[in-house]
Image 1 (spheres, rainbow, N blue to C red):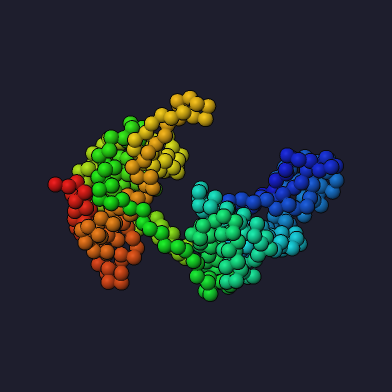
Image 2: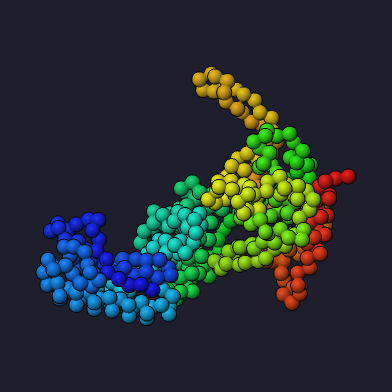
Length: 406
């Protein structure tokens, strides 16, 4: 941890002086605390410029502030305090500034800072919705009645039932996090169940899958169709896991990867999944071999996988006959698509593998779960047994042979 003074010269006060801050930098990031002091120039360590009035008194006071801030940080580190809370404690204990009451939206934003990229964005959206509905909602004041009222408000503002359910799951994850950090003992979800509609798995039938595999699509669509089939041949491997595999993931005819998943309590669950690379999958892997360290070239030059997934879903929904039709001004330059599978997404490969394995081949639920990397496939007894890799290999090959046909 580093604690040091800083003069913010980006904006001067009305009298031409600049505010003096203390920066606290730790493993969680850094934040600024206003000391209330000002200076006419830069500091030399803790020493103020000679032109400053009472420079020696100010230097002594700054030294005391730095010492007190360090003491507070050492005391709080045991409790693993997040930086937002730590800053509030410093303001209160060192500078006599009372901690601003933190509302539910503030804790959602603090929790969001522990996440990455798109997940952080999703929690930010939840915080904005909570703020729009009830900006004075607090952790301790939130109960089951508030949750249900918030759900109805989300739906009345155009959200689907399952969309509102996702917002409530985000709020539940924040409460689980806050309770682990001993910020609150309140847990409104003890008396509240999140309502969501059952959605029909978006799987393809055997005939639809074969039609997609053999369809003479446009050249620009081929790589997306191939990626879909590769995902299917690898037991419906999640697109995110497949796109983020490195080149050394395949060894001795098997692909090994770590599947990361967050459970309902907001806890990270990590599982190692090993899948056989069948002949059909090998052909696609060779076709799209990466030169940039990835398993697949789809990630070459990309910062993240989201853009590829979005384009893939759009492309899959356009596979089918197309025609050029007049646009709004009457010119023949608009392409109209007639998709053969208008509801398909990359995730359909996962549903399709599970559906064929269960319904057409009567493979056991536990074995399908091992292929898909589901934690529920690991019952109490299986905790004491090594995963039967042969069952996984046989199941994947059986499904692929069945789809290949006679």
